[in-house]
Image 1: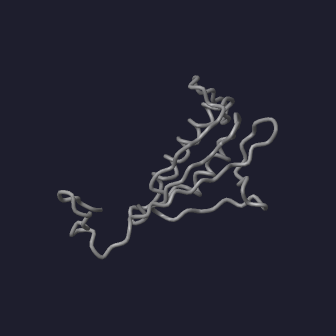
Image 2: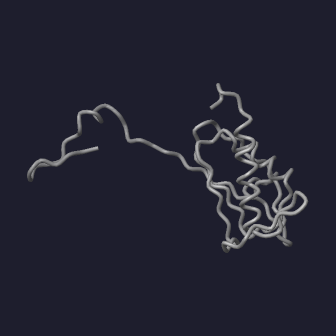
Image 3: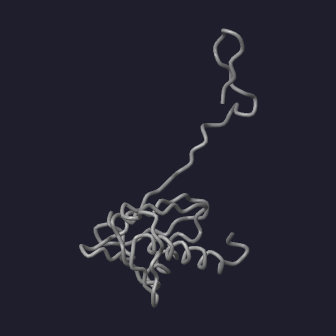
Length: 133
């Protein structure tokens, strides 16, 4: 943080003296989607498909790609990995703002996948103890 006085060079603000720049890490995890559009609780970036479990306070983007079908139990497994994060952003290349189609524990369109994942993350995060928040 700097402040400019007149035409002179910028000076550090007293509150920022001695501190480095604030760094906010943002991670992106691409989920594995098969050719039929099924989203699985596997990472597309890891050769073995393992998903990272993120520390509290992390900001994560979950990239669903063109995924358009997910089961509720798979959504819960994904939610367990990101439940302690400060913020989770869901990114979909196939969502168009349509009404979510969720029947019998399965989401059958991209907007339904987003909705089901959001509900699973909310549900898993709410079950945490107060000391973990």
